[in-house]
Image (cartoon, rainbow, N blue to C red; front, side, top):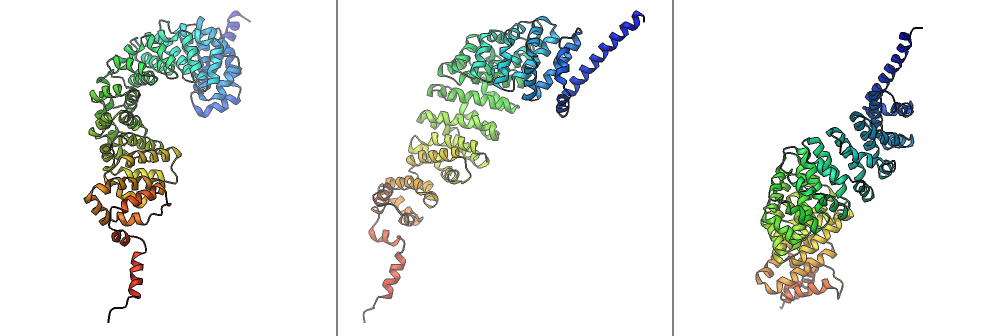
Length: 508
């Protein structure tokens, strides 16, 4: 047998390995093939190919494993149990850029599923190797490493801290300054995932100088980058007054407000979330947003959005309105109550309705004027409806009840209270009747109206426990009228009159 024939055997073997691994990688990219591949024992066959002498076979084997691990946590666990991770970590330090990208992809695919699987990635020493990859010259390697680190950090504070301790943050901040858009996006996303868990973790991102660089990108043309930038700024600002002030000091207002009309709905949502996270902390921060025209911009944003996209805007109005009378007035002047009332008619999901109820309650609770602004938008009957709905979530019922109570206790605009006399259950009715008992003794016109609209009659029909607050309120109202009028509107009075008629003997 000549040497040529001997070499042919080896060539054939290599060709077969190449074909096998390429075909498996191709098959693994389609979900319908995954189970068959798994049952055929694909993991055990791919593992030795990670150590193949031919670099392209190594890389393609890693790519195939990444696609499998990405599919579900069972397959990711199989990668961990197959002892594949240490091999990948070793290769991250040794191999070429193509292999590094593929290896980082497998680590990311394993880490994404759960904190336990992400822990396996940490335990095999991957973080240090991934951080070294952030210093590579090749932007693709940096991107793959940043992506894997973000996927580890996103699960919880402990894993996020491990990423920080490995020294990732300053390098991620350098990555957001690189020219490549996709690298900027992934690095900003990783910083967001690190910052979200605690004030301390957010502080490490701030200390690395991230805010200034993120703030410079808010008017970038790339929607996917802006999504991540606003997400990261919101995750920093949400934790404390100090962190929110640092974000504001990067002079993001009024520039961010233009992004509330961005064509990408996730950019819009993340901007609204950022504004909400700043507004919630203090009256001063809310005032700053008002001065920049932020409330009016958010009101418009709620009007142009639907469902979960408008949720952060709805809550932002509640936070601003909660701080003080003047801030609640700013929301009213910007037509915030009208917009919330409209949203209330349009939305069907309980968690969104609960947020609307909460915000309206925060705005109406300050003074009679604030309550009137809410009441005249016909909001009270809608709140009552949410509270009484038998299929409503507990959260919606609680928030609707609280908002109703907040508004009712301040409201002296009687026409808005009138409909509630007829529909409200006793625990709400008590607050409604209380308001009438405050206003009627001092308002002649209102007393007359109360009779002609059927209010007085309705009050006589209420069964109140003797000595209860409700009974006291009814008493106060009845004392505003001559006894015969009260009697006339009491239940059974017409029957009494008829009985008297029966027994009446006209004088001869």
